[in-house]
Length: 157
Image 1 (cartoon, rainbow, N blue to C red):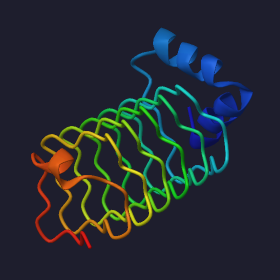
Image 2 (cartoon, rainbow, N blue to C red):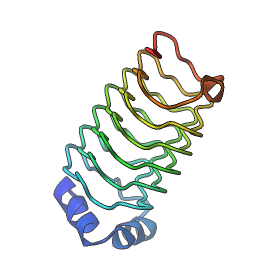
Image 3 (cartoon, one colour):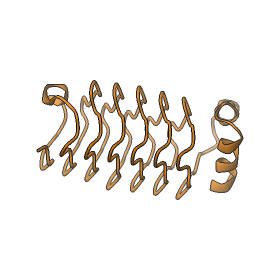
Image 4 (cartoon, helix red, strand yellow):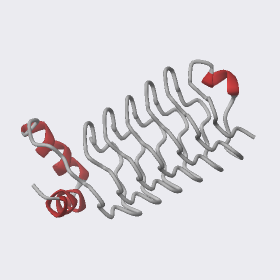
């Protein structure tokens, strides 16, 4: 399936998208450069998907699963990702500015040069995450919640 086919399936409904993925687990999901801005994608299954350069600004992604997804240069500005799972994602030069990541799981995520300015990271879990050169200025978080994360070269205040 092409990016346009996957996008059309998402626009049909998240349950239809998730069911297709369940029935066709071998089918790679490519949403490279997809425009998904402002969609309600609650509980969507993006595990292992190619989301590079995708636009998910303002999306409701509460409870979404992104585990092992490729997300370089993705724009999630002002997205709602409460309770989302982003375990082992790769996201270089992405944007979470103003996003709500309360309670999100970002274990072992590679988040190099990601902008988290004004994001709410309260209760987010970063065990083993690499936030090298990430911008956390003005974000809401507790440093003790990030004790197991690599914050080398991160801008934290």
